[in-house]
Amino acid sequence: MNKILVILTSVLLSTSAMAMTGSYGISSDYVWRGVSQSNGPAVHLGLKQELGQGFYAGVWTSNVEIEGVKEVEGDFYGGFSHKFENNFTLNLGMVAYRYSGDVAQDLEEKFVGMGYGPINIGKVTGIDAARDYEFVDLKLPFITVADVKLHYGDYEGIRDTSMSIKYSLTDSMKVEMLVQSNVRSDNVAFGDAVSLHLTNHF
Image: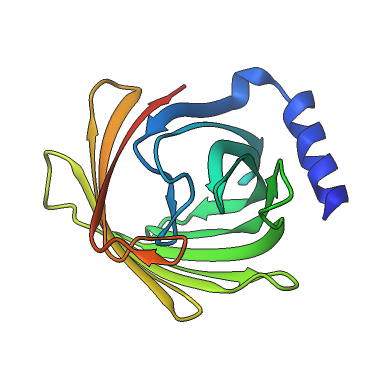
């Protein structure tokens, strides 16, 4: 996996910056699969490089707080995506999660996602000791004032459900409200939780 990370980093640094896209923003809470990762505000930055023929590579980073210790998370990913003429989409690849400290454990996953119209389903398979994750997303296209999406996921028995409402402030800046049930942090159930996310795309 370390060799794959070296390859992804080399690709991102060596390819044309004109073909690179990205985003940066701030969130009131960084929640991942029903679990709060930051226990408060989080700042995030992402870069994605299209490699041609549907292949891509990227990196995403954010501050996190694991067991009371503040760290930095870096996600390195690569894969292949394609949208067919019948509106069927396919996305598959791998992602490696890396942390700056010693509290959080690094992990790797491989994933496959398939979509048709407003429905997208996916399967994430953990490598080595990492757990599997399955999810279903449903967009509500009849709501035109904002992008609304319903989500259900199962992280080997730990279920998360959410609704996201995303509104475009400008062509590049979007604000999102995420309403998520059973958000967990340090094994404490907070019940329903609402987080806000402001992201600028470039």
